[in-house]
Length: 299
Image (cartoon, rainbow, N blue to C red; front, side):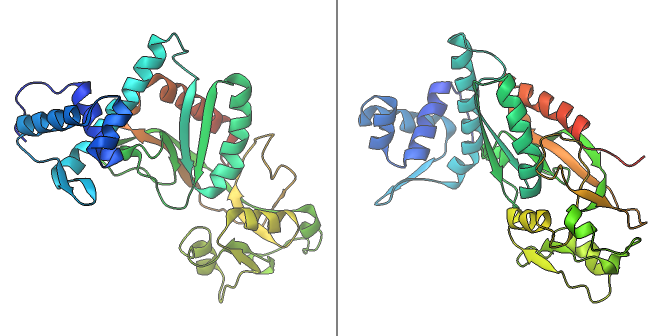
């Protein structure tokens, strides 16, 4: 792309409206102007860039390859513009407005939900949305503002704001623990773990490697189902050690199997382009402090 002259927020806003609405007329309604104005602005932008951004057809205005490459940057500009408007209105530069967090289901249930309860008391103007998903969301495209991941990000547009080493333990309800021998072994445990299509998720591979002919006593593809079975004494699960007073598993008991489990690794991740958005940074700082307080390492 050969850019002659600086591109403005007006250029990005027009481009983003057409990309989201997929027609020039719908983009015009969104921006409160006429369709000819949108057409003229896009044509002018394409002329300055020297590339076609949209393919016009019966299905509307669809992004070309060149347009798709510009979309993430335009979306980030929109988030910064929204932050600028909030500050200009005199709103708090920190904990106010929407914020989306993504995490694996276990961390979403056991860590982010209790964290949200604490944060709600401190920042009632913050509108928190938690995405609980096995698959990584696309932070570079704005699918979430922050994410907790079990691996350091490899994408060049992402950064890890914090890394935590987390101790693991074997946990069960007191009713199940009462049925075990005084010094149980790995083979004595009725294991609760992931089922298809998540057979590759830890701790199942570790259990399969440690126990000949491993078969779980209970399995599911849903973390809440696994946790419900655990709380009702069906068996035991490998979980992160936490010290969170609001965690749903506060009544669980750790089983001493006389073995050392490997630590897990957690990363707080965000897009480099949004790491200094005041709202994102403020929540990230509180998450980092909470991660240090809640997750307990082996001594």
